[in-house]
Image 1 (tube, rainbow, N blue to C red):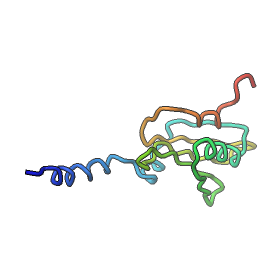
Image 2: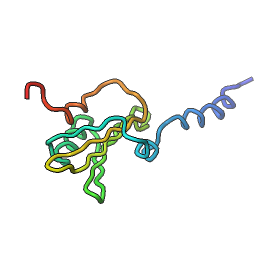
Image 3: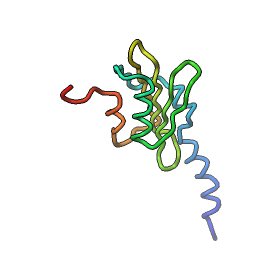
Image 4: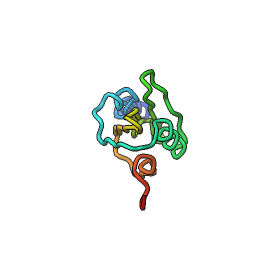
Length: 112
């Protein structure tokens, strides 16, 4: 008897339900907050450029950058707000991931 189809019919929705949607991740509280002297545009460009993703412009002047895994689930969401002469970056986790090249965009350069 072929049990593959019934197992897939039950397991596929469960597996997909574990993936964090964009709205789910953005509605979570920030797990990390950074302040930088760089403008919103420079931080957003840096994040997008290093991760090969697009920037989403918001009506309030903020920008959102989403990092997704190979299954297109949101792993990290960055909301970049104008803050005085620089910007404030709120990081929200969809789930923990390896790697952190994004930190080069929000942390001061070493030796600076």
